[in-house]
Length: 362
Image 1 (cartoon, rainbow, N blue to C red):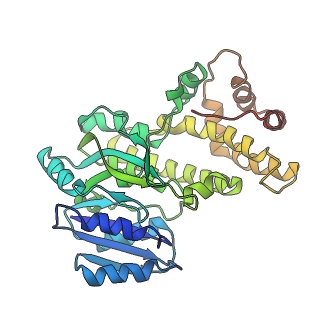
Image 2: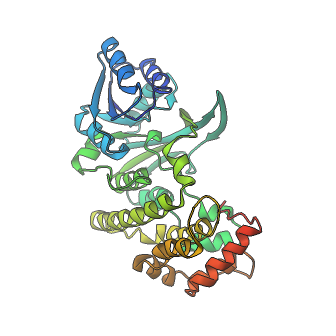
Image 3: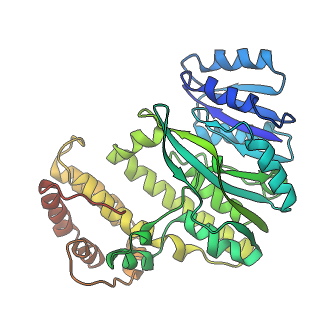
């Protein structure tokens, strides 16, 4: 049993994480902690814990990002099963024991379970998997599980337009909510995409599920996701330029994943995520049309939006999307996008921003 933990500048959190791992009632495991070039006291704290407990193996490396750190951890890990934790979170003391017992009892390749959102010492939300509890096998895994992690479809947008908030729902693809048989990763030579700054879990968990024959879903929480204002995802959500580059990179990675899954299973997963691309174009239009926080002229902001909307891959997906919905304010931007009216769309959402209209996918 191997627990792989990437760690970067989490000196204020890493001890809580490591202590929760060492407090496990199941004791036969190794902890591979990859210090990804931290500039704070993270490395020193990890070395101290490694001196206290021989199960902890600390690997120090130059900063290359969480994907490269996890790949390093996978290469070093020797266990039968893998758990992927983040260095600023923590787990229940019975987590490993119950997960090991369940994955063996169900003869599963992979487990998916729930988690708790945790902020300032308080659980703020309990999150169970959206899927029904139970065993998923073979041909049911891609349409029932993978499809909810990789994105949402064009038909999902149309459901949203009709008032179904679940039409744009995407299940949290974090690897820390999964246990997996290590040989599944090794035999299929799965790695995290080091070219992605965000979305690496989306691609990896989808790749993984396309290889799985038996996956068991548990409606039980073992993991605490700790909120940090300085986390990568929190910073990303407020950075329009980072979002633009992140979405373009993720589009490239999704297309490559689609080819791999088609070759591996004969299933085309493209319809499961094309709606995400359409809505990303609108999201970027709203982000770049805001005057505050971007620091560019109207022309420069419009040019950034166009870099995504007129990308050949994006434009093809938008053209193929069949828009269905009754006239209303949230239909208008989609209609303009579909017809290629990019400048009128950008002006329109600029006005909506001035009116404090909130673009809400939920």
